Image (cartoon, rainbow, N blue to C red):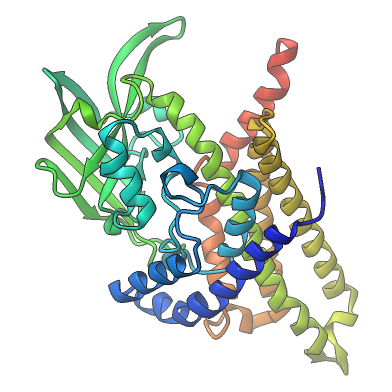
Length: 386
């Protein structure tokens, strides 16, 4: 593994960081205040992303995407982590799972998503089935060449701006040595499909302006042509997709932690108490030492996991380790940054209180910290019969 960045990788980092600072930062305070991104602002960010040639950089080059590998894309998303998710969602990164599109799905979903003509969202979580994906109650029964869907999804990120949703639905059951197990299929569902409704979700303290939604299906009829991948094989597709999303959460946590640290460090060097800079007190200087050590460790865990994916090496445990460590690191770093700022750290004059609130959800979505620890321990124990 090469620990230095190539010229191309450094260009990715510099370009995206500059974009975030110039195009994202100026809108953050208003989005935080209003809880809303004006449509014209989102469209402008998407267009400027296209102008610099970074829209759909994670998608296959043969379909018009940028074709970035896992490591390069992880570097890109690390820089996006510095900005508000409500705004950076418009920096086009279609769900990688769309690479599984076949036949007419390529022209109907994949290529429009790569061009930025359509935005997608992904739906898995239900009121009674979060981490327990096999426990989902949203079902589809086959009726001729169609599937009739009934049920509810919730906590569906940015479904309010999506033109179509990638939805995981139970399409049957099978007997296993542990009892009945749901068969899962993945469907592509267009906004406006009869029987399908996108509703506002819950007000969250994390990532204001980046909305979650509720999806309702009532006798919603979908043709078999809208199944992504194979019938009853959606769980396998989901597992492959979760690799990328967990890596995204980890690397964006690193980017956000670096931004918090970049605020705390100069403050410690200039703020005076008791006649000297507070950074000269061990109580503060040791915090800074621990913070940057934690950030660097999370950064290398994340980049090494991405490197393993690019090399075709097993990376399930490494990605889980990166996700759990980086998200918990972000909570520690934002908390310590506020402590260094004192009372002003909790005021909305600075973005630290926002980073602190935003950090809480990272340990929950895309697989809780408990799920990540389960993955890690399972990978360790299974080979030796544990």
